[in-house]
Length: 311
Image 1: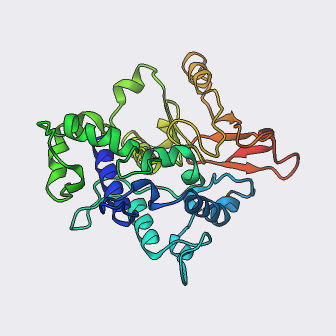
Image 2: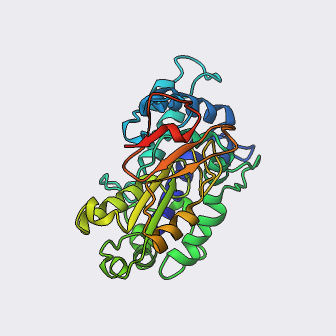
Image 3: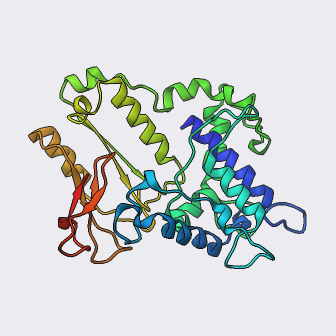
């Protein structure tokens, strides 16, 4: 969580730089992007990447092949609902690239472009809904206070996160980052006693990047003998469109607890979990163990998870 807090500060500063100002010259954070702007990005990402998994259904399962550049949405003239201003495009690219210091070194992960950027959960965390210069985004109300009161060692209640120095201030989070961040990969004692680990992450999670979790999982695989040796006790599942632990245009309804119990007690490793969601009535898909994703078999209803294989 420590390095993710740095990302929260990075994002808020970037959004505030282009947000409209009130009469006193203070940025109104929520208005850096309108709901229509975010929906435009979501729809364009879907057009670019939805069919990469072989089926056009509003869900981006083949995220590794998703290539999207917000620059294609840049207005050629005045700002309209059908385009983004040059400043909006620049900030979007800066935010999704993740925080960096002046030497260009990453301080946290980059982020996947996904359809859930237009969901209320994404806005609530990144931008908020406040109509005034007093922001109510979770990045500000939660992460800023966490930065000053917990992640900094020692705490610094009077610190202004909007003046965060990305060269010198990250070192102030080192002590808590060791405790909070996902760094440990040598899990031989955990695996030797028969324990099982499931990692599940929404691709549109605005709090923690799914790319960060994927890279952690890949390090666990690397440091524990490869996929053949790690799949029996640790698996990772990506959920397209899902925000932080739920919400978004996603198939977010799946039974991970039963999957974990049956894996632990019966040795039945979950190749996938069948998922549904209120955003896609009548549709189901297998949420596959990474790095596989659903492939349509070529016959039967494309709405039915039973007609897809994880490959």
